[in-house]
Image (cartoon, rainbow, N blue to C red):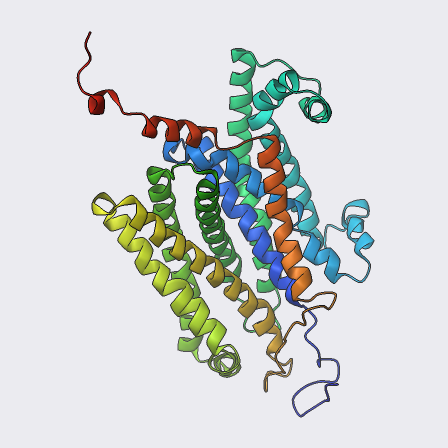
Length: 405
């Protein structure tokens, strides 16, 4: 049992926001980042991202469906989470997440339905048994897949993707706003916090797509689309440069001002957080991927597919670790600063089997991947790669030699 020592107030003994509050912004970041990749194709017409556009949309929905689970598990009474919607309080900062989440969920569900509507109707007509019943329910009674109807679907999808971009940014930027609005905590209270959260969310979303896309292609025996990987690496590199610069600027400006709060923040970063901040967040998670992605982007024309895929996979994996370390340092590290600002509290180490422990965290993080697997079983999302694989295995006209005709 912790005891009151010196600068620690009696009501400030425990770290209340646990591993669940670390996972919560991490998942919402993946939601926003995956949606941005999908929107780059649907709204901005970046054709190189076509192989992952539908998959990114489904991944965004899968992560969004479990985004509230860490919060609900953290609450003593999860059912009270519905009070945000049932008894709205528009002056509550925390309640804002419920409004943004509900609105964004509606947009994402409708966009996913429109993107996969043609497949749903096709499967509803071709399959039998329980699968046909599920597909018929998913059609919502709309079986028109004529060219005119699909053109309308396409226009509505683009519109939803366009309004979904600010929705995704608001959903995750709001998480940063909650931390940045805590004026009593010098490590959180910076106007850059929502912006850092938004850009790091995009980084984690693109990185997750690179990792998942390559794993799925390997498991299915499909060819990894090099143009798609190069394009995602280019965007990932750009967002990483912005994110890393903002993170450094936040610390550098605080160090330059040398206000009274810098003493405790410096003690935190150079002490208990030295490994997770300097080691994982800065060196391993940011500087190394920055170099690897730079090599891929600058040397893309002279680099083989296998080397580019391997380097991008390593860089993306390290960035997923970096963003999680950033969330940990912000959520847990910020709480380690005592409210008296005179010293640090004891660190937090989640147990394996407790209610908000490591095992529960792993389970929550695994659920979106199970949803993606189920979605891939019902609505295969990699038809383009399958066609590409077949085309690559068959010699082209130029490779087969001149025609006899």
